[in-house]
Length: 410
Ligand code: SF4
Image (cartoon, rainbow, N blue to C red; front, side, top):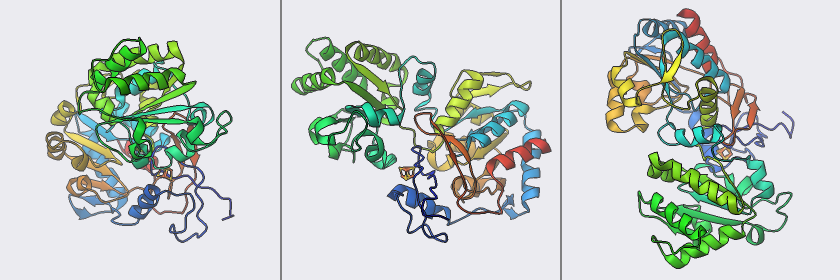
C-alpha cells in the first residue's frame, strides 16, 4: 500500500474518499476517518455472523439454498433493507424482487422517501456537495444534525471549508442556521442562528417564514428573530437547505408547502435542497427504484415483474410469508408493532454482523463487509456516484454474489 492509496469510508452517506490506512493490519492509525467512521470499522470486527439454518450451523451453500427455497415457495415475499448495500447488490436484489413478485422497501422510506421523489422528479432544485463547498453562503440544517450523523459534513462541504467562490473564513462568508426541536451538536456551532421549534410544529415555522419573506408579521415564534431570519435569507447569494428526519417526519403530507417555500425562496435568490441520508447507499436505492418504477419507496412487483405502488410496510409485513432482510436490523430499529410483524414471518437475513434480526432468523447468510471486504459503487447523499475497492480480502461472498446465487437457485 502506498502512502496515497486512499480508501472510501462507508460509515455514512458522505462516502469520504480520502481515508488512509498507513498500517495494513490495523485501522487504529487511519487518517481522516472521523469518530463515526472509526466506530463503524471497529464494530465490523466483532460479532460476525456464520451461516445458520434454524439456529444450527450450516454451510454457506446450504444457507443460500434454504433461503432460495423459502423465497421460491412464498406467495407474498418482502425484501427489506437495501441502504447498506452497493448499487450492484441493489440491482441484483431488484432483479430478484421482480422475479419473485416481492414488495420492497427500505428504512428511510417513511422519512426521506417523499423528499427524494420531489428531488428526483425535479420539483425542487438540488445541487452537489461540491457546489455547496464552492458557492454556498447560507446552510440551513432543518431537523438534521450532520455533526452527529455525518461528522465531516461541515468540515468538508457545508461550513468550514474554503471554496472557489468562498475564499474567506467561514465566519465571514458562511452562515450556518439550525432549525430543530433541541440544541443539537450542529446547533452548538451557531447558537445565535439556531431556531428552536416545538415538536411537530415545523409547518407553523414554515408558514411564518413564508409570511416574513412576503413582508408580513409572522404569527409564530419570536417575531423579531423570524424577521432577522428573513433578512439573512434575503441577503443570501446561494443557500442550501438540508432537511433531516426531524423536519420530514413533522411535515409528512404537508411537503407541498415545502415545495411552495422553495419556489418563493428562488424568486428572491438561489436556494437548493440536499437530503441528509444516513446509511451509506440510501440515496442509491431510492434513485435506482425511482428510475425503474417512478417511486422511491414501498413498491410491489407483480409475479410478472410489473411494479406498482405497494401497501404500507406494516401491511406488507403482516401478510408476508417470507422476508429477506439485507444489511438492516428491523427488529431493533422499527417501531414495536412493525418489528413484531417482521418477527412473525420466516426471516432470511444477509448480514456481515450479528444483529437482533439475525438472531431470530430462520436462515442467516454471512456477507463480506462493503468497503472493507467488498468493493462496488454507491451514490453519495447528493447523488454523486462513488466507486470503492475493498481494503482487505475476505472468504465471504458479497451481497451481490449472494443475491445472484439465490436468483439462480430459484
Ligand atoms: S463522515 Fe461518514 S464517510 Fe466520512 S469518515 Fe465519517 S463516517 Fe466515514
